[in-house]
Image (cartoon, rainbow, N blue to C red; front, top):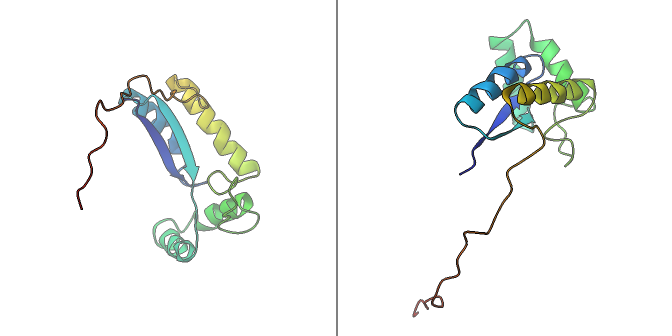
Length: 133
């Protein structure tokens, strides 16, 4: 059974540098593919995240929030379909390239996925039973 890893959430300026070691460890554990998701901060989550940064990483708070805003057209969240998981701009591109390097170093393609197959599917020999209700 194909298994993979989703590196998430990638937080620019806080956890983005950990992608290399996460992908490497995942491949060592048997992962055959990888993906990533950039942090999303919808609704009240943004307030909780800001509080968490203030408490646990006060020196990085402004840097992290500004990078997220740079990736989200000045906002902390962008629910646009093609932007919400990866973001846009220079920091999103930096994360994409870092992820691609991590995959190549670990021996994975950052674009290829396993092929789905119905080769082992077998139709039941009998028709489906009625519930008898």
